[in-house]
Length: 375
Image: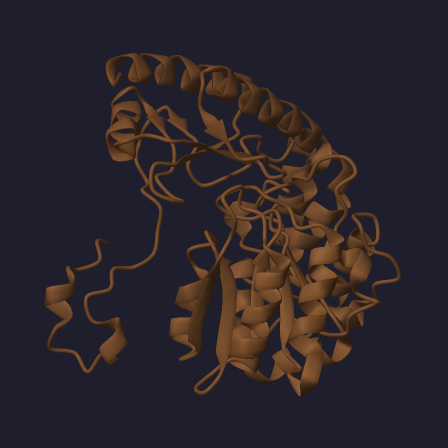
């Protein structure tokens, strides 16, 4: 169903700040090559799909009953997985899950944001963050990243000390740039957010954490050091489970317990829990494609730079490249050739998700033609 234009909602008693706002969402166009929303191009294997189907079938026989409200088995399985993916000693009490990491973030701001409180990040950053703040009536503050999309740690500390945010949101790898935060940056920001009685949380959003390059650590390693640190992950990307909507976090047990106050009753369905548990049983197999995507990403970055384009260093499954005087014209010309990428990030930049080798070849050939036409 198509959402009506903003003017058609003018008669509603809508909150004032929501007037004229259109719903969030990347373009969904029926083109042969879709490289715009950072999906994993490789679906679950037949074995994983069969296990998921069987698990959902078993769950279907119990759908007259509410699911496990605390999703204990899933939390235990997620903790076990995180302890193989950068973490150590993480327990089920330190894990929380919801319908995508989007809902996890919203729940964090429902619990720790609100009127009179501030959420802070550093632009360019994930475009949904200010919407989480808006939806929870939390003030939104955005500092700036450096020209290479890194953080000036001195300036970041000063902004946190000045604005005293209750929540700092930091994607690492960053979306849309792909830039990862070094551990010393995470530690400094945790100390700044908690210093002088501020007690702010630092949320490191590792939606693309499994795609980080060799030697780039996860913020999970710092959980024991900083009690105000929250690390979020998703099963949408590396696990090829975008359609299932499963996101989760690791944090101090007190943080997880506080989120239980704002969660909706039985928010994770029995079908969702069964799907996620089956996928985790096949983690090595599902994650096996991650190495291929890393190789394809690095090759794409090198190729783009070889064409004379600027490309941000990426630890994610996408590459941000530019710059173009009229990026929309380039984006549109690619669409006309059957290739959909994302028009996002700073002015002049575009973002391409990493697809299969065939999809990336189609992207490259189309981009060559478009650049020749737009000289």
